[in-house]
Amino acid sequence: MLETILGVLTSSAGGGLLGTVGSLFKGKAEYKARKLELRHEQEMRKLDREELELEAKLRAEEIEARGNFDIQLAELEAEAAREVNDAELLATSYSADRSSYGGGWVDKIRGIMRPVITIYLLGISTYIAVYLTAILNGLGAFGDEEALALYGTIINAIVFLTTTAVTWWFGSRPINKR
Image (cartoon, rainbow, N blue to C red):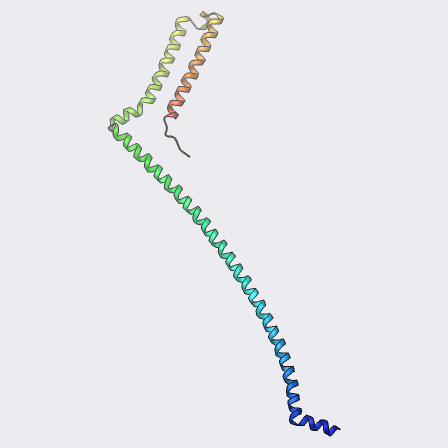
C-alpha cells in the first residue's frame, strides 16, 4: 500500500494534486498579502487625505493671516496718507492765508495784535481800578451793600475776561478731527 500511495504521489495525478494544493496555499498566501497590501494602501490614502486636509487648513490660515496683515498694512498706509494729506492741507491753508494778507510787515502786525490788545485791556483795567481806589479812599467809602455789589461786579468781570481770553486764544486754533 505504501507503494500504491507512493506510486500515486509520484505519478502525474499526484503531481497535479500536489501542484493544486501548492497553488491553493500560494493563492491563499497571495490573497492575504494582497489584502494586507490593500489595507496598507487604504491607510496610506487616509493619511494622504488627512495630510492634504491639514495642508489646506494651514494654507487657508496662512491666506487669512496674510489677508489680515494686508488689511492692517493698508489701514496703516491709509492713515499715513491721511496724515500727510492733512499736513499738506494745513501748509496750503497757511500759505493761502499768508498770501491773502500780503505777507511781510502785514503778517507781523496781524500776529502782534492779540498780545497788544490783551496787554492794553489789562493795563486799562488796572489803571481804572487804581484810579477809583485813590479817588474813593479804598473800599471804606462804600456801605456793606454797595461793597458787596461792587465785589460781585468785579467777580463777574474777571469771569467774563477769563472766558473771553480762553475762547479767543484757544477757540481760533484749527480743529483736529481725530
